[in-house]
Length: 366
Image (spheres, rainbow, N blue to C red):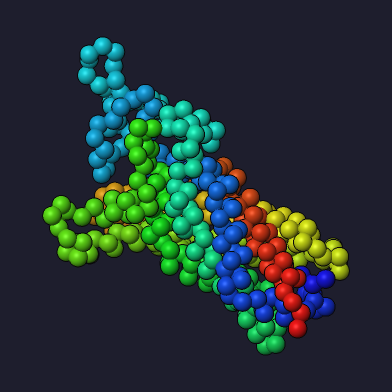
């Protein structure tokens, strides 16, 4: 049996590398889309927890039995009003009035105050984002890696180990830029609390809330405001490109070594196990290292002051986070981020490779 070419041809010369390159782009996209769909549903609660913790650190107010004044663009925790017994007026909340203390605390308070299904808040955006993004990302990575490995093997063998790093960075940049507004909507949908009685806005309404055109002004007259859909793109790229570089440069050697132990006894089960294990380790490491950049991305995406949002840069945001919270602030939400990324990468990679394996072995031989 043959398996998809998932390692450098230099390290496994006895494998037929043509089978992977002969897969059509739609077959690769189908494999990736299925993987993204499964991953987005399973790990979304951890994504909600991570985003809530980071948004809270940035100043987004979360109230339980407290009640808020009308939400303003630059609202901070001290602006939230808590009720006082009797008919006395509300008083400002203290910092401990209602705060998330960790991942499990987020789960508990979201379920208690908003409902169990709110843990899947933003799933529609996750699916709208993950399917096309991974459908672009994984096939592009495959194609770029195959082309680069073929070139470096013939012309510069010493550069072959760096192919996954470069291919992953380029593929992720392309996927990120093409689908960024939906990523912005997902972060905002997960960050801001909706009460049980309120109807949460979807992706489109969330994006319109970012633009917030003036009443009586046509969309075309306010067209320039749609540039706010791209605020934070630099922070997204500064997080995703290093993440992909670390992830792929870690993943490829691990799964090569695991599959090397199997030898010629490859099967769907071994492909699944090798890719999930390698993906889990690589995703966990990459997510931990890039957590400060993820915190900066979240803070830029939830900023409601348009003037401030346009002036913010990743560098100044990181400095601000360090000034406000130090090292702990830079790694806010690292727990749920790592718990999410490890299984998520493992699921996506293993599902993608197993579906590719199945497509190759069910195709009629000519």
